[in-house]
Image (cartoon, rainbow, N blue to C red; front, top):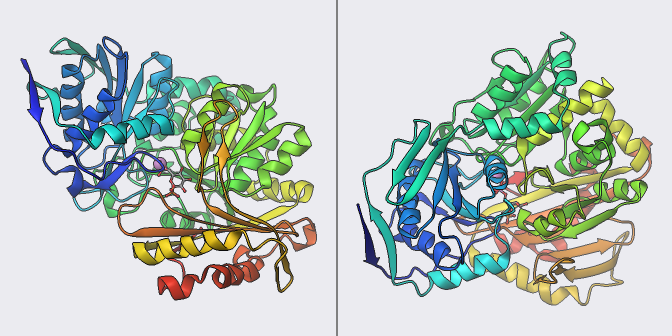
Length: 544
Ligand code: VG1
Ligand code: CO
């Protein structure tokens, strides 16, 4: 086996977005495209020679091929040992767990998360650092800078390895260990939650659940946890075999794309609890019988009930939420007398807070919830957290959430996405808003008076790094908010996200449909941002 140095030319578009480099599969199939990016990662790191790397992905189309290539580049660059999930499978939270457990210098996670897969779908590469979390901006910009000047990569000439077989192999001087994709993660979950209480509840005949893995990565994890370790009936996990094209669907756990599950929970004689997760297993959707829990409320409920769960029985150090996430968690933090941090969108901004012990639970409105147990959001962890609370309280999901609203008030919340909009009008819309914000304070729109308006910027309280232009937020004197930002994970055109929130303290007014409760704000968002006229769309593509 020999190490080859291949000359190459830079691509100009290898800038990682909210969560790694995401492109259409076709883009990754261009000669040298993947190789350039992986070599750019190694070129911008120091001090990894002889050390351990973790490698795995969500099993989507191109996962297996990319892993073989990455192994050979890692070997040629002097990585000491690579831990690969069996069959190339590691969910994002499991990869984070394995990095931490093995003191790896980092990990490469292959996924485009909730974006569709298959030859016509998307692929992605994410680099995680030694704390198990997504690389912070200074690392991703170093990788991007390197990708713009790269002129060669190193690769070992060798046959492909059989990744379906557990065990240790040699690839040049590097050892490759094919590890069980599930066991380290499952063990971590057992250390956090009361599996006995959950098992008793799941086997009591009083309570039924359904988990939809949407043909994506969590299938084997969910079967091991719910069916094998917790005794739920066989078949509790549906769509539990990861498919390269996710069965043609969008592996995105929301009311639109997880509609099969929604139908089950809203049907006759449906189960008491339903959950779904996304392509790479870091997102979750929580449903009760005929009841949907918004991700922001879910974070707030988990925080308010955390001490019922063994892993969090001593309470929380703090909570962190992304800026567009509703303020429901803030109200819990206030009552608990702990800090609530507001960060830009993307899990990488939680890493420092978690490492410094300032936050224990974190969450995003985009169906992401997690804690200091790993450094990624974690779909099945959230499901287990809910199960643990349900098994202790023996109340329905709806009862728990309604009682929560009674105590804290309800933050009506919705996100409207305009997907695949032309880039130019989307940029114009944001540019207009940027020039408008400084003039909005004190302005009256019907019953709404603008309390503040800005383009969100964030100074990391730990390392002082600053992230600017993270989204336009307009807050009103009654506590309502509208936030506008462009997605950083799409691969075609632009996606405009409009986040709407209204606080309702009066429990007699907690039964409204969020779209109705938010109707005046929805209209106001259009008036301020000229969404319809600029995008040419008269309604959003996806409402969550
Ligand atoms: C979206 C979500 C964001 C999330 C990110 C990655 O980003 O809004 O909250 O962290 O996806 O999640 P954007 O830039 O498209 O709004 V995942 O599960 O796709 O890694
Ligand atoms: Co994801």
